[in-house]
Image (cartoon, rainbow, N blue to C red; front, side, top):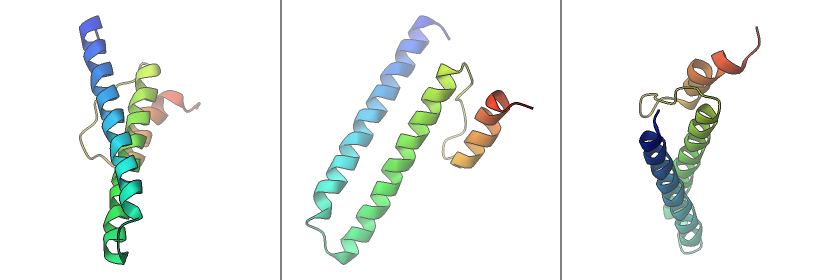
Length: 92
């Protein structure tokens, strides 16, 4: 990855983190105003935000270790760990 690609990847990662933080903060603020039915939707929103934050952390870890983080969108996080990360960090 050349310098321009690294810069673009860093920009995208930073934007993603910022938007996830905004989503998490908004969900937390809305939770106090929601009724029981809406809280279930807000909890789902929190799950989506947590998943996004976890995927961002996995991409950062892979990048820092020099491992490809070019996995398909929506890939299960266990598959990300098992297929992309573990083969490079688990001692045999």
